[in-house]
Length: 327
Image (cartoon, rainbow, N blue to C red; front, side, top):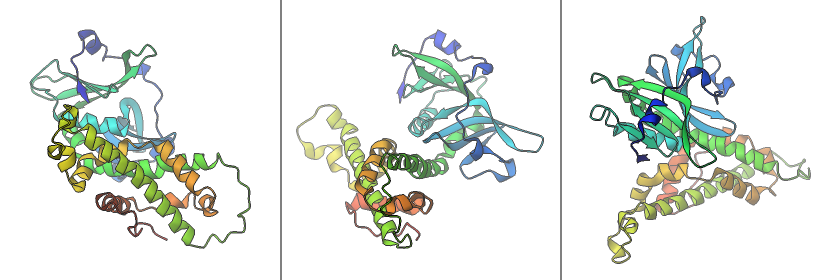
């Protein structure tokens, strides 16, 4: 995230007619039949018809901040008033909102990851901001697009306060949906010879072997990203201090401290296509990969999995029992 004071013209451009909003990227089946008295766990009401939710669409996971309308039957429907954010942009947006000088600077503007802007609309000491998406043009310039949403007072507080709850669902969706869909697509690239048609699918060893392979692939990508981040975020390394390495933050931090500091960013930085490709390439010749293609993720207890993943990274041990899977 970086902060920038944009031109007055750009700020005026934040007022774009709603009828120009692009088509919503929403999973309609996922959103069907939702009522105020039975909101799913991945959806948080922020007040005045505004919701924050985790959504999966076209193999991707997104966090939406969106206004919903209610029909005569009390069913909620997404409107075009809102923004759809990548998980890493959503996380940086919350950090920016917590530090946004809405009351101190009436002209404050923040730009997050060259993807979304925060404009200050605060009047009479009541916090009010507009969040609006940015789009990169072919000439490498940026322009504001109609995708936007307005948040006031308690809505801003609620958005930030619900971070932990939404993050849990983001992690689950990235693993079971984003990665799961990529693994399915990767498997389709390999011809199915049919030579394993008579294999006994009730044998549990195959499932255990696949889950163990998935663990090790995820461990490799996460631990590598955490190692890279510990170097790139080290203040001494950034300043080019090559002597007295023993005093560097990247050297002095324990593995537990590095995990706590960098896990979220490392998780968002995973190349899911590369992970899926590696996993399938290593296991495509095993007969049970195609049999357990769907069960591999439907049987996954992600909460226990992330606890075990932390143990593996902190202890550098890939042989921890896989008790987070239900057979």
